Length: 164
Image (cartoon, rainbow, N blue to C red; front, side, top):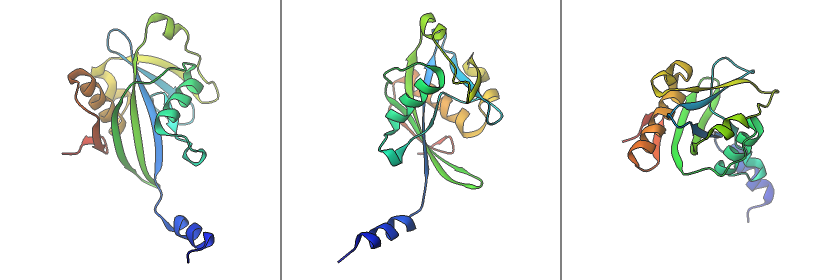
Protein backbone atom coordinates (compact mmCIF):
# COMPACT_ATOMS: atom_id res chain seq x y z
CA UNK A 1 0.00 0.00 0.00
CA UNK A 2 1.36 3.41 -1.00
CA UNK A 3 1.35 6.11 1.63
CA UNK A 4 0.90 9.82 1.03
CA UNK A 5 4.55 10.27 2.06
CA UNK A 6 5.63 7.77 -0.62
CA UNK A 7 3.55 9.60 -3.21
CA UNK A 8 4.97 12.97 -2.14
CA UNK A 9 8.52 11.59 -2.40
CA UNK A 10 7.73 10.19 -5.85
CA UNK A 11 6.34 13.55 -7.06
CA UNK A 12 9.39 15.36 -5.65
CA UNK A 13 11.66 13.00 -7.60
CA UNK A 14 10.08 13.79 -10.99
CA UNK A 15 11.77 16.10 -13.50
CA UNK A 16 10.67 19.74 -13.50
CA UNK A 17 9.69 22.04 -16.35
CA UNK A 18 8.75 25.71 -16.31
CA UNK A 19 5.57 26.85 -18.04
CA UNK A 20 4.77 30.25 -19.50
CA UNK A 21 2.01 31.71 -21.63
CA UNK A 22 1.72 34.85 -23.74
CA UNK A 23 -0.66 36.64 -26.06
CA UNK A 24 0.06 37.79 -29.61
CA UNK A 25 -1.66 41.15 -30.16
CA UNK A 26 -1.54 42.94 -33.49
CA UNK A 27 -2.71 46.21 -34.97
CA UNK A 28 -4.59 46.63 -38.25
CA UNK A 29 -1.30 46.76 -40.15
CA UNK A 30 -0.17 43.42 -38.71
CA UNK A 31 2.44 44.87 -36.39
CA UNK A 32 3.01 42.93 -33.15
CA UNK A 33 2.70 44.44 -29.67
CA UNK A 34 5.93 43.98 -27.70
CA UNK A 35 6.74 45.03 -24.16
CA UNK A 36 10.08 46.01 -22.64
CA UNK A 37 10.69 44.44 -19.21
CA UNK A 38 12.77 46.24 -16.59
CA UNK A 39 14.17 43.02 -15.08
CA UNK A 40 16.20 41.95 -18.12
CA UNK A 41 17.46 43.28 -21.44
CA UNK A 42 15.40 43.07 -24.58
CA UNK A 43 11.73 42.84 -25.51
CA UNK A 44 9.04 40.21 -25.12
CA UNK A 45 5.32 39.58 -25.52
CA UNK A 46 2.73 40.31 -22.84
CA UNK A 47 2.61 37.17 -20.71
CA UNK A 48 4.56 35.28 -18.11
CA UNK A 49 4.72 32.34 -15.77
CA UNK A 50 1.69 30.09 -15.39
CA UNK A 51 0.78 29.75 -11.71
CA UNK A 52 0.24 26.02 -12.08
CA UNK A 53 0.69 25.33 -8.36
CA UNK A 54 -2.51 27.35 -7.86
CA UNK A 55 -4.37 25.38 -10.56
CA UNK A 56 -4.02 28.03 -13.26
CA UNK A 57 -4.17 26.79 -16.87
CA UNK A 58 -1.98 28.17 -19.69
CA UNK A 59 -4.91 30.14 -21.17
CA UNK A 60 -5.81 31.59 -17.76
CA UNK A 61 -2.16 32.49 -17.17
CA UNK A 62 -1.85 34.33 -20.48
CA UNK A 63 -5.01 36.30 -19.79
CA UNK A 64 -4.04 37.13 -16.18
CA UNK A 65 -0.52 38.18 -17.13
CA UNK A 66 -1.81 40.33 -20.00
CA UNK A 67 -4.28 42.06 -17.69
CA UNK A 68 -1.57 42.62 -15.07
CA UNK A 69 1.14 43.79 -17.47
CA UNK A 70 -0.72 45.99 -19.94
CA UNK A 71 -4.14 46.48 -18.37
CA UNK A 72 -6.08 44.67 -21.11
CA UNK A 73 -8.32 41.89 -19.81
CA UNK A 74 -9.48 40.21 -23.00
CA UNK A 75 -10.75 36.80 -24.03
CA UNK A 76 -7.91 35.15 -25.94
CA UNK A 77 -8.30 33.31 -29.22
CA UNK A 78 -6.88 29.99 -30.22
CA UNK A 79 -3.59 28.44 -29.28
CA UNK A 80 -1.13 29.28 -32.05
CA UNK A 81 2.05 27.57 -30.88
CA UNK A 82 3.57 25.44 -28.12
CA UNK A 83 7.34 25.58 -27.80
CA UNK A 84 9.67 23.38 -25.74
CA UNK A 85 12.68 25.59 -25.02
CA UNK A 86 15.96 24.49 -23.45
CA UNK A 87 17.98 27.09 -21.58
CA UNK A 88 21.24 27.21 -19.68
CA UNK A 89 20.96 27.01 -15.92
CA UNK A 90 17.23 26.31 -15.80
CA UNK A 91 14.75 23.52 -16.49
CA UNK A 92 13.14 23.41 -19.92
CA UNK A 93 10.34 25.89 -20.58
CA UNK A 94 7.02 25.01 -22.20
CA UNK A 95 5.78 28.24 -23.81
CA UNK A 96 2.16 28.61 -24.95
CA UNK A 97 1.28 31.39 -27.40
CA UNK A 98 -2.36 32.48 -27.86
CA UNK A 99 -3.99 34.74 -30.42
CA UNK A 100 -4.76 38.05 -28.73
CA UNK A 101 -6.42 39.37 -31.86
CA UNK A 102 -6.23 42.63 -33.75
CA UNK A 103 -6.56 45.63 -31.45
CA UNK A 104 -8.17 48.91 -32.41
CA UNK A 105 -7.01 52.40 -31.53
CA UNK A 106 -9.13 52.48 -28.35
CA UNK A 107 -7.47 49.32 -27.00
CA UNK A 108 -3.99 50.75 -27.59
CA UNK A 109 -5.00 53.97 -25.81
CA UNK A 110 -6.22 51.84 -22.88
CA UNK A 111 -2.84 50.14 -22.35
CA UNK A 112 -1.55 50.77 -18.83
CA UNK A 113 1.89 49.32 -18.16
CA UNK A 114 2.64 47.49 -14.93
CA UNK A 115 5.43 49.81 -13.80
CA UNK A 116 6.91 47.20 -11.42
CA UNK A 117 7.86 45.06 -14.44
CA UNK A 118 7.64 47.04 -17.69
CA UNK A 119 9.33 50.12 -19.12
CA UNK A 120 7.51 50.58 -22.43
CA UNK A 121 5.60 48.99 -25.31
CA UNK A 122 5.77 49.29 -29.07
CA UNK A 123 4.35 47.90 -32.30
CA UNK A 124 6.88 46.07 -34.45
CA UNK A 125 6.44 44.94 -38.08
CA UNK A 126 7.09 41.31 -38.96
CA UNK A 127 10.34 42.04 -40.80
CA UNK A 128 11.86 43.61 -37.64
CA UNK A 129 10.65 41.08 -35.07
CA UNK A 130 13.85 39.04 -34.81
CA UNK A 131 15.79 42.26 -34.07
CA UNK A 132 13.63 42.67 -30.93
CA UNK A 133 12.96 38.99 -30.16
CA UNK A 134 16.11 36.92 -30.70
CA UNK A 135 16.25 33.16 -30.59
CA UNK A 136 13.34 30.84 -29.94
CA UNK A 137 10.88 33.62 -29.03
CA UNK A 138 11.35 35.41 -32.33
CA UNK A 139 10.98 32.17 -34.27
CA UNK A 140 7.88 31.28 -32.21
CA UNK A 141 6.22 34.61 -33.03
CA UNK A 142 7.03 34.32 -36.74
CA UNK A 143 5.56 30.81 -36.80
CA UNK A 144 2.44 32.02 -34.96
CA UNK A 145 1.99 34.77 -37.56
CA UNK A 146 2.27 32.11 -40.28
CA UNK A 147 -0.36 29.99 -38.50
CA UNK A 148 -2.69 32.99 -38.47
CA UNK A 149 -2.00 33.82 -42.12
CA UNK A 150 -2.52 30.33 -43.51
CA UNK A 151 -5.17 29.11 -41.08
CA UNK A 152 -3.19 26.01 -40.12
CA UNK A 153 -3.40 24.26 -36.79
CA UNK A 154 -1.35 24.88 -33.67
CA UNK A 155 2.39 24.68 -34.32
CA UNK A 156 4.49 22.31 -32.24
CA UNK A 157 7.96 23.78 -31.76
CA UNK A 158 11.26 22.88 -30.12
CA UNK A 159 13.51 25.85 -29.45
CA UNK A 160 11.43 27.87 -31.92
CA UNK A 161 11.68 25.37 -34.77
CA UNK A 162 8.74 23.37 -36.11
CA UNK A 163 8.72 19.69 -35.25
CA UNK A 164 8.10 17.54 -38.31
